[in-house]
Length: 475
Image (tube, rainbow, N blue to C red; front, side, top):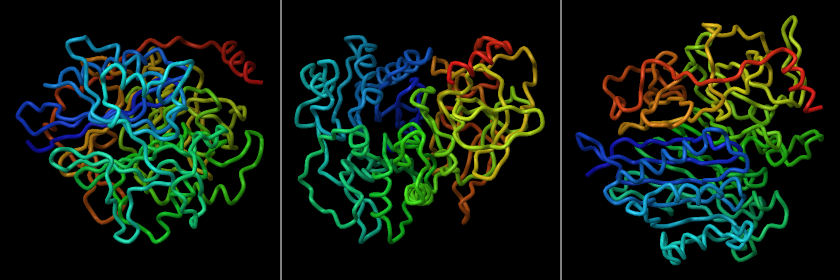
C-alpha cells in the first residue's frame, strides 16, 4: 500500500536531540509502516523527556511488526545517543523492535561512553546485525553535482516515496579541493567530533526536512562548497534543525567571548540561504549557552508570516521561544535586559524551541539583526499557566502540504497548546517561497492528535526577587 502522511516529531529531550519519523499507509484507518529515528540523547533531561520517549515506544510497538527502519546517529556525543538505551527498555519483551539498519557519523569507538557502546549493544542484544551498522566514507555526500540532485540514498520506503540522503557526513575539511576518502574520523577536539556530524535530507511528496546534528562552521562550509553551482533541491524545505543546538562557538568557530569573523558569518549566512528553510526548530535546555540568539538571527525562516500561535498569549499570532541573549536587541521604555543570559520571549517568527518557557518575566522580540525588543503584552488570563517545554510535530500530506502543532509533551492522547495563526496547515503551492495558508477539512489522523483547547501545564510563578536571583546566578 502507498505512503500516506509522514509525521516528523522534534522531541523535547532537554539538552539533547531526538527526531522521530512515523510513516503511515493510505488505509481507511492508517497504519504505521515505517519509522525512523534521528539521534536520541541528552545530557540534561527535561521533566518531560521520559514521557516523550514513551511516545516513540508506544508508536513503534503498535506496528504489525515493531521496527525502526533506520536509526541515524549524527555523531557520537552523549546528548545524541544516550537515551537510545532508555528508549529500548520501554518496550515489553513481546514487542522488542528490530533495528533494520544503523547509520552513524564519526568513529565507532567514540560511541563508548563510561564503558558502554550503544552500537555494540544494538548488535550483541540482537536488535541489529553487524553488517547493517554502517558509516560513510570521509567527506561523503549523496548529492550529485552534475545532475544537481541526490542520487545515493541511505534509506528509502518500500514504495520509494520517502528517502533519506546524507547532505554531508564525516566532514574532515571544508576545502573544496580536498578529496582523500581514507583519512581518520577520530576527532580529538570538540569541534572535530561535531564536524563529522551526518547532516540528513528527508524527502517526501516534493517537500523535505534537513536534520543537522551538531554540524559546525566547517561542516556548513563543506556543504556550501558542494552546492556552489546552485541547486533546486531545497526549494521546498519545510524545516531545518538548527546546527548544534544553536551553538555560537561551533556555529561561528569562535570562543564565547570573541567576535565572530566576517568569514565565519558568511559561511553561516550562505548555509542558511542555501537551505531556504520555511521553519527552524531548536532543541536545547539552556546549557552550554545554547541556543545563541546571534546564530538564530542568521537562520530566519522563509515563511515570513506566522503559521501557529499560542492562544494563551495576548500578542496576536505569537508563541514563545527561549534563547541566550548574546546580541544587543534594543529595549523599549522601562525595559532592562541583561546580555549573555537565557530568556524566554514572545515572537512572530516561525522558529520553534523545545525549551518553551523558563518561568521568568518575558518580553516580545522578532528574531532578526535589525529589530528591537518590546514589553510583553502578557497572558489572556492572568491565572493561565504556560508549559516549560515543547515538542513540535510536522505532519506532511501526500501533496507536500504540512500541518504543524506544538505539544507540552507527547503523552497520549496528544493535546495541542497551539492553534493556527490563520490556518494550521501550510501549502507549498504557488511560485513564491512563501507558503499559502489554506483550509483543510478532516486531515488524515487529525482526530487523534488535534484538540480545540490547549493543555494546561503547571508552571511555578516567579516573584521579582526570584527573577533577580535568576540573573545573579549567571553573573
